[in-house]
Image (cartoon, rainbow, N blue to C red; front, side):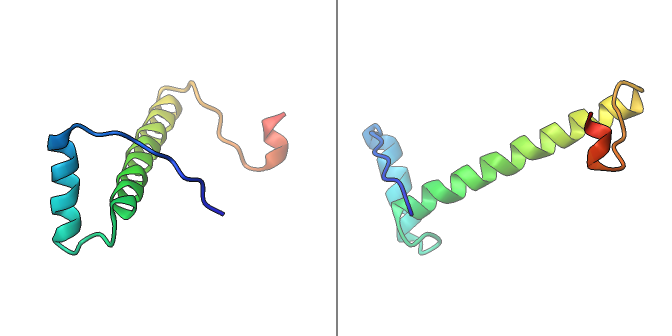
Length: 71
């Protein structure tokens, strides 16, 4: 099930989105924003993984071998 979210954009940004959709890369404005959110989530995950990796290198992290190690 999907949730409808309405946003308002200034004319310049709306025009940019419409041009991207017109290229055929996106089927709709909704697909443009879904792709934008997926990209955001990928960047955020990459940053979190890098932070975790840094903590492990610095000896501040805990390597978990099983779910029991969470306790």
